[in-house]
Image (cartoon, rainbow, N blue to C red):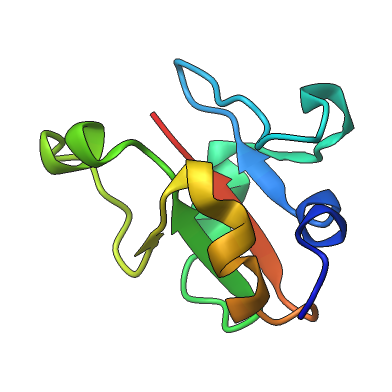
Length: 95
């Protein structure tokens, strides 16, 4: 099983108007960021995986969802991190 902390180092967070906090065990300053316009330009790229890490309530109550994004719980990264290939760019987002 892949080390979840090592996996998180390779993640990118999309900076939205409210911002996102880095997942547990990683300092926010150490996580690379992707601007929204860059994400929009890369949507549909098979080398990109977009993961929506909003809380269930925030996700369910929102009409703003990225088509093709995968919904995962931010508090259980260790449970799902190994499901994603290391050779992809993984983008976590919350709004």
